[in-house]
Image (cartoon, rainbow over all chains, first blue to last red; front, side, top):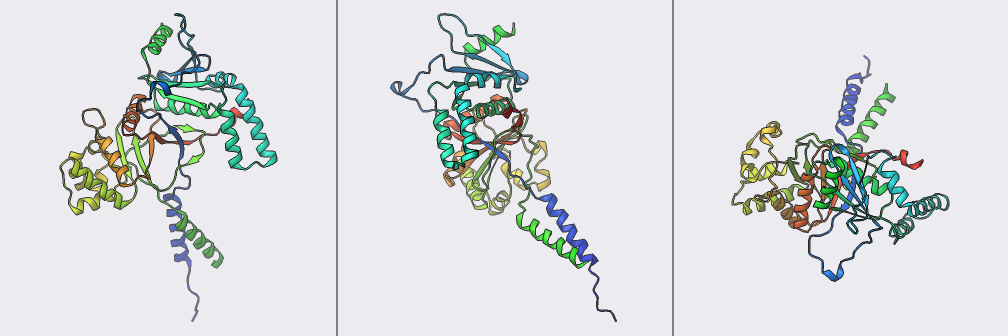
Amino acid sequence: MSTRVDFTPMVDLGFLLITFFMLATTLSKPQTMEVALPSKEKVKEADQTTIKASRAVTILLGKDDKVYYYEGTRENDIDPVLVQTNFSPKGIRQFLIKKNYDVMVKVRELNAEKESKKLSDKEFEKRKDEIIADKKAPIVIIKGTEESSYKSLIDVLDEMAICNIGRYAILDIDPFDLELLAKKSL
Amino acid sequence: MTAMCDVAFLLLTFFMLTSNFTQKEPVTVNSPSSISEIKIPDTNIMLILVDSKGKVFFGVDGQENRKELLTKMGAAYNTTFSPEELKEFSLINRFGVPINRMKAFLSLKPEERDLPQNAPGIPCDSIDNQFKNWVSISKGINKNYRIAIKADQKTAYPVIKKLMGTLQDINENRYNLITSLESSKDFENQ
């Protein structure tokens, strides 16, 4: 009498279970993007800071992933020039990189340093924060119109990360911006 | 044969230990891609799901927390829930029903809960802002909850703005926006 046991059914079961666990599991966790919005509490007049018109860039999100930007604000009754662009590397990104060139160069140098000299992550973050908080760097104001989609918002926040924009805010659209948009679409 | 069997069971053990199961979501949401590489933490997540039409779903983790949440939420809207209903609720990941339909929703079979007519979304307009109460009560139960917003690419921006506005009203100003991964290679060579 043979004492060998037939293992085939057990192996079958083993592979069946492997298949089940492989299909049911999630190996990659979703990515997340951290956003902080200003609190709605009223800020005292004295604590408010006014930003220089030369630093301000306003990005408007439009219908069908269209994106518009203008620099500065209305001065002496002359409207800023509203430019229509898109989310391709040659679009809004090129403009922001040009605008934020000094910071981009410094961050790139820092990245190179990190790779060659093995800067610690903490040190790297600290120095990056210092560079990004540059006094001349642009401040970006993001405003979405009623027709824009959530994708545009994420895309524009992505551009902020890519172009190392340290200071940006998501605000409600105001009549002035709508007026500019209306003029542009004529 | 023995070697193959060994390998098979080794793999089986690996998958059993590492797997955390895909959580079923009541609606399909295609989150937009971004270059962000921060992973979402495993625990203490309050997930707000917004589908492409703007319906809002809500869910917290921790079964005990869920029970407490429903009890308190019921108290705020003058409804009491039986222990069975609380038990049922603690097993649901995300829900999207107004509180007055919650009892009916909990009595449904699990496979019926995700049907569109049974998931109208949580009201979050200014007249009846139940969403705000869900968030503030959850935050009261566990103040370490992080707010994660998962919305569809096509979700209209005003919907998101309204949600964020509501959250700002109750002084919640930090969110995690859930995205999928996109490679950032094309900006590096500029």
